[in-house]
Amino acid sequence: MLNHHAGYDAKNVLSAKAQAQFTYYFTRSVGLHAGVYYLRHFKTPELTDTKLGFSAAYLPLAGDNAGPQPSIVQRSNACNCDISSLGAFAGVSIQLPKKKKPAPKEDCNTCDNYALAVTAKDQYTGEILPNTDVVLKNVYGEIIHSGTTNNYGVVVFNNITPDNYSIAGKLFDVDLKGAVANKSDFKSNQTLQKEILYTDDRFILRGQVVECNIANPLTGASVVLTNNAKAEQKTTNTNDKGSFIFHALQNAAYSVYAKKERLFLADRNHHHSKFRPQQDSVY
Image (cartoon, rainbow, N blue to C red; front, side, top):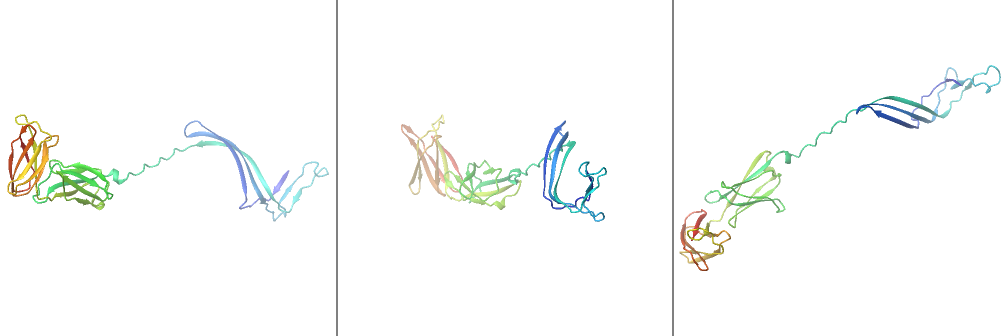
């Protein structure tokens, strides 16, 4: 039986531990746990008691040392021996609720609104141009948004991702002078204003061929526009709505008539002095 030991003051000792544990929760956060472990330190040097002059002393069991009163055995040389321990433990377990991760911040391009308003105008008169087809293209020439101007000559594109764009427009098959919108132009929750311009100085003469008295549109009718001064003619056919379009010069007098098999259609005369889309019907 060991009676005295000088102890240990070991540092940086290689150790190994094996443990088995069982936990039972009564609720989501409170429970009991119990287990056993085995711990072993390898080659741990003993201390030597400087006053007594030995590291360990023990009284041997009967039979290990002859005589009725066995003497104490001393070990003066410190031992670098493996030491181990076996233990058991038990206690109360408390499980804290998991901290919720904060929701990821939304991209500003989705939480803020960036809008672009495009106005179509005539370059010479400043008149607004309804029914103008407008497209928004990225730097690769891909169409990102498209729309048609309203009665105020404006089309608005919402939820725009700020980037570099080109803006193009077309009115009655005539391309308008486009514009660009740079990424730096866009402001959060504001509408960027851009203009595209009709630069063709010719008139747009738009009309419709209909049957007299009942106003039914005539499809496939041949329409002829004649410049009365130059005796120049242009010809086109009506579409499925009986409509037609001509581009005419300023300060010129024109006559227009239509014809279709087995039908006689009256004509109209026009004189154009300034830019203005003209709407007329031929019967």
